[in-house]
Length: 108
Image 1 (cartoon, helix red, strand yellow):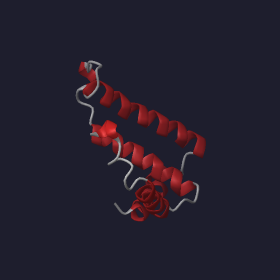
Image 2 (spheres, helix red, strand yellow; image 1 turned 135 degrees about the vertical axis):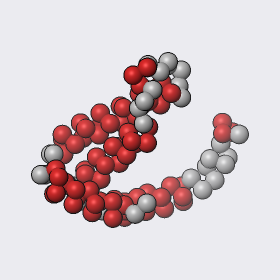
Image 3 (cartoon, rainbow, N blue to C red; image 1 turned 90 degrees about the horizontal axis):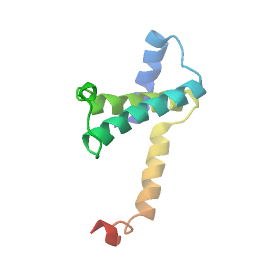
Image 4 (cartoon, rainbow, N blue to C red; image 1 turned 45 degrees about the vertical axis):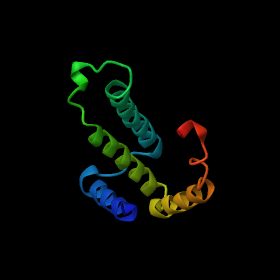
């Protein structure tokens, strides 16, 4: 996924359709709400909770995309190059966790 391009697309959408970005605190609250919707689907569909009839039509992919959208908004409005941050994080995790998970007895 090219995050830089995704950030640009979201920025253009906001400027064309959204008028302006919500402030950072509002977007953080929205992110929390969207993550909660993802958690609800996963808990009921893949966890031990029973799925309500009203939840059966919920699209996990759509809810995950909502999370990504708000994350991209937050990155844009705080001046974060999310692609650079993601690449750095993957490099750090690769170096740090190279053998860690293979040596974890709990995962065998």
